[in-house]
Length: 291
Figure 1: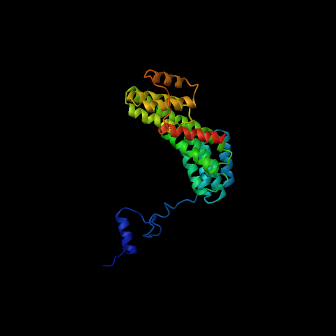
Figure 2: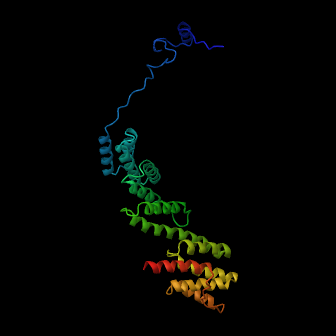
Figure 3: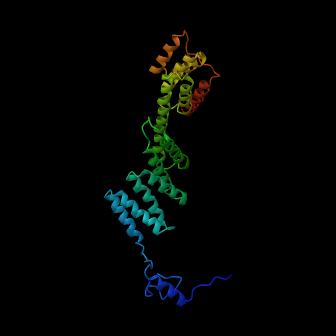
């Protein structure tokens, strides 16, 4: 059955029955009854250079929150223009300076998605990496932020190796790796104290496998000697001590490991087939080649 619409007179009667006057009904146009009352207002765009200048002025005043808002408007009002590109990058920078790191990360990601070949792409990657780095927590807490920072910093070095930010990224990669190793050591020590030796070994093994260039490697090797001795795995204990002595002969951790072996009438001795020996032979070989 075809649908029928009320006639103009019938519509007027319905409105009158509801107590609605006819004057505000846009000449009783049934498809746009309240057009005059709710007609949207056109908001003129602020000139791009003015938005940008105002954003810079707020940056100088350290009003980073409002600076970010100005630059964000520049991005939104002038989409697909070079002003949009500048606005988005400055939004990321203003949020970073204002310690709104997650907002800075999001803006940097959007920039890299839209402008991957831009001359400022390396800087956007740097802002994203530094925003993760600034949120690295204490070693006693979950290290997800540290892992994200490491990934972002490594991507910067890999994608933009000749950029002016690469050297700083490399330094911060080492600091971040040290942080992650510190977390593994904390958990490993806990298991060692609880005499959960296999669990402790897994943590210390991660340190010497993944983070052997950090300051925690010496202690991790000595702790492996302790755990292996406790389990009666003397061959692995001797190898851990031998690797420790070869790489860190003056370390107090080596002295402790040596004394512990002597309590069992043992000496440091490397088993070539041990996973420890294989790992550190690779590291030693790379170091020698670099020199």
